[in-house]
Image (cartoon, rainbow, N blue to C red; front, side, top):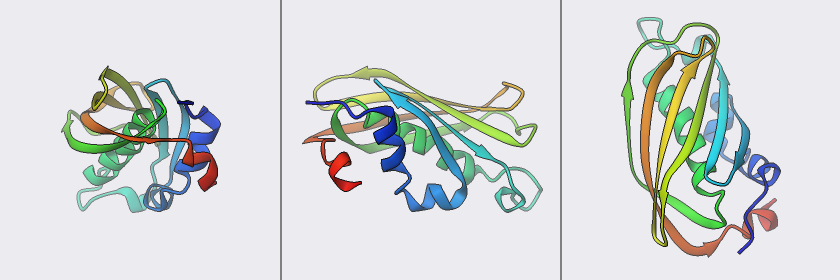
Length: 142
């Protein structure tokens, strides 16, 4: 089983049309880790002028997907939850996903979303089911 490179994962996840539409950029992904960012724009704000929770969730979810698919097997989410801790400051958000545990069938991840001041604004936990299929098709799909 060959693990996809960070460059392959970045190219592959550009195919995530919703994340692309929202404006999310995958910065890096490898060995159970991923980092993504988003420049906050006016259309990301909710009715009270704060970043919409769905935008924050989507940013964390893309980092989660990239980290969990970086190990060489196709991984699909089976659960996810998020806690919103504070409103972000500044114009950019970052999500860092780290693998907590990984076995043959299940893997768990924690994703921290920070603003440009480095403050933690949310914590996302996710679990994936690791399918038998390998991520070799990422290269073929490009």
